[in-house]
Image 1 (tube, rainbow, N blue to C red):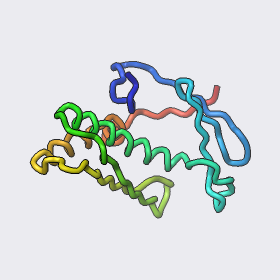
Image 2: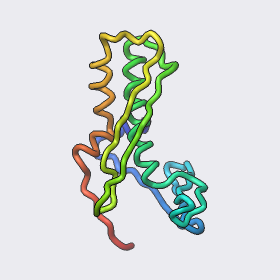
Image 3: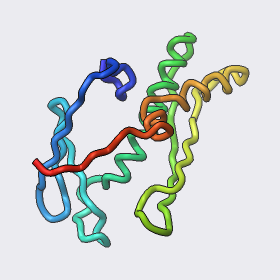
Length: 143
């Protein structure tokens, strides 16, 4: 299915291609979709697109939203009004990294309060969150 990476088949291999565009921006190709990443003006970019770190945090937020939305649908509840707000903080020291991420779900009007803990349990086990808590092996090499 490919939705938020949640239905990926075990062992399935995905691909992403990144190419230099101009300045500090890069074009990203994913399954026929095109995106751009850039840096803010103060980092030498043109601020033409989100940064890679912003996309990283957005990836987590959208995955949480997807899982929460599927929970709502499975229980016959409306998704209208569902949202996720995120704040994150960069680490002060080395290595450069995101130190903290806080996600807050906005629930649809009339969401049954008794289901809140179950919804949080489902949403907090999205594929991206699982990948952060059980990190993948990362290898960087040269072609």
